[in-house]
Length: 422
Image (cartoon, one colour):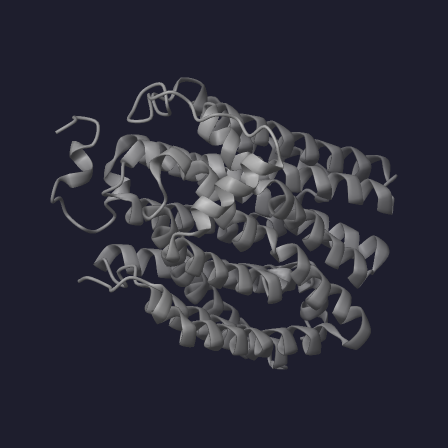
């Protein structure tokens, strides 16, 4: 057996398997800090945009601009990760994130922020994210191997969620203590640990199992279409991609950009503790899910389980949308976070485990195109729709529609999937 893959097959303790790998542990810590910086930027920039423009439409655009690059460029970003060193691609994404935080800081400091400035910075932020996502998944696969992949994906989602949880708390504290301008400039430093660690990290195609020749470049639409057909012809990948895509398209995370309005309607409209708690409740639920599921090795990846968890997630989002009592809204957000991590990490694991090795980056790109890229349209249904009928109704209707779609997919899924083995 190849020594690079031996740890993956070893029957070690089943709890937090990925954290027992030193390279995986270092990467996950750096990713958590980077995601925390991403979240801090959202907390500060969304609040400043809301305070200056009071525009639900701009809040909707924040969602669209963040996720549209995933729809348009995820497959190409995955192809880049297949052909080139994913460490360098991640570093490029980190450099773009740092530039955006610095740009916000300058505009806040000079009090010259205009709508078009916000539009440009939000788009660059989205492009940085699309570079990071496929390369991150491919690199963690290179680090831990096939046998520990489910644990690695779930732990990666948990580490990113830890960053999301810390981000609102730290972002809110920063705004209260030193102000938005200094806070978002300091935020640049949180991207540095991952960026610097990647320079010498001994992982990627030059070190492990992917030493084989790089896949051929896509030279036209025909090559792109052929690769997508090859990937989506695999039933498990197609089904999990449809599930994740439906959730992203109809609901996504559009309510996050509208959280200042939700906080105001719940009687907590100041940029303080209660606003930060609303932002952090979703992440707290996801963090608890990651810890509980990994500590007991619960909910092994099965397609039917993923559908049921997704259905419950949509119900929790709908409950939050119609809540008029702050503690109840907080509870629904916590439940939504728990279920979100559970079903998304499971669907991603199933799709990635069935991906051909030679097309793994492209397969991750296709999945990201659906699970992340289609979130751009949730900015239309929830954000722009909210400007017409109110964000509570737009989110509640979107959640109800999603439940119908998931139920339909669930009814059809068993005919498309292989028999599950225990």
